[in-house]
Image: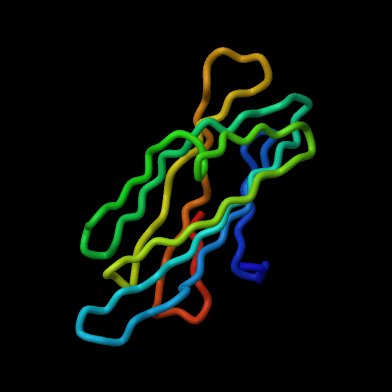
Length: 137
């Protein structure tokens, strides 16, 4: 997912979040399946360390089926980002639908704060009917 044309950049306070999606593969048989890839880069532009504690994101397809990943960490890792550092995460989601929407948040802890906060992620629209993936604001 290197093509910056399909990327969206969102500012959330002192954090810059870059996101993208792509259709990785579509099977062409009676039980059609679409393999969607998604990518996030969270950049810490604050003056303090942040810890990415976990995520809560959803993918809802055109038939109303929802898939949720609400878990601690990222592939077993709890990233800590010093000022100026970034964390990249990518994964895939196999769906039975050609169209879906990805939305959600990450739970972060800033500096010495005792209470975690949720930061919104950009909404991504998966659309196998388009040459270039649409990204909603």
